[in-house]
Image (cartoon, rainbow, N blue to C red; front, side, top):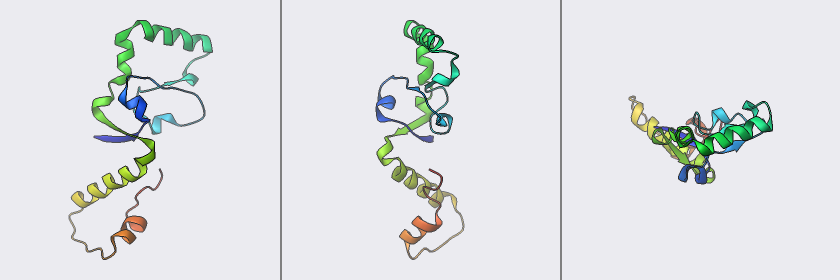
Length: 117
């Protein structure tokens, strides 16, 4: 499974976010899970595409093929949840026995949790 942050409402319901701005949406959203207005030459082209999706259920549902392969976390607890995922992965993948006397110290400073989020 891949873990990605997503708004809870988009994950629960079959709603396609239409995004606009300078954000790097590809780095935080599953592929083909949103519509970026920058991909269209004009508002008219975007409107035509949205109308097309409204009338074509097969094309519309293509935007939700990501759901079986991702888990969407509500933004307010994403950082904490992904830290636990990282901790779990480290606990199960590191074959070298180590003793950590201060788990908080290790988790906060050495585990690289929540870096680059």
